[in-house]
Image 1 (cartoon, rainbow, N blue to C red):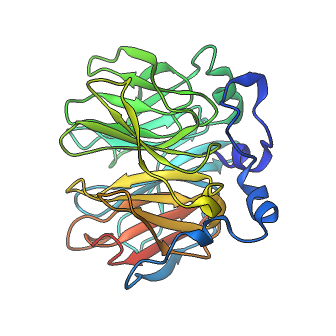
Image 2 (cartoon, rainbow, N blue to C red):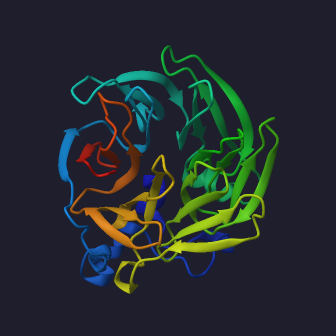
Length: 321
């Protein structure tokens, strides 16, 4: 979800999104009188939560590479333009990998370790994307920032996920469908119907695409990749948590648990294999994405990391175990 969409959309224009969608996350708490996700039980032995960095702008997405380096996008790092940044370890200073990106969106890696970054993740692009796609994907070297356009014609590229066979999926939080990009770069717009899809994650076997929903009753949908008409609900919280405005999504390496930023509720949730949802952290400021740690050092395996619209990078120690 973009911050502009979260803060300014009390309704969706032109009937692009299902009528079931709710008002913006800024209005969730006043409407219910309590944080939206109080109905989600706290997990057993919740992780220790630590703010590693703050003041890094409006952070949209995050991902960690196998050596344990954190990559994240900031919407307005270069004036009106965004950037992809890197932290080599939790105590490092951020390094700009690539700048001058118009509304950076989701992040993924290809088989060569190159970053795949969405662009066009803004409210105008998302709304226009229901008619004609203006967003796209960049391929970026994580080390020297060399950048090239990979594909255009996507609706929004808010969430981005890559399957083991090289297929890439991209979401439009202000639309009704998910886009598909085949391994040769051909775009299939409106591939699977998931209204207000945001964060995306593909299981390690490449069978299912999971998608969190923002301006709809909070849920994680599961799309059968071989049969995209088969969309089921994998996880849905109780009634009090239905307006939690879910955002970025990640899946563990075993494909068992999903982790999602509940933006409007200020929480990080875990959805188990059976769809049971518990809260790993509460009281955060508009968390926008989560990333699974990797490797023995840096942003290490077993930990979970989150970024927020308030420019925070947060560590959840042992949150992904």
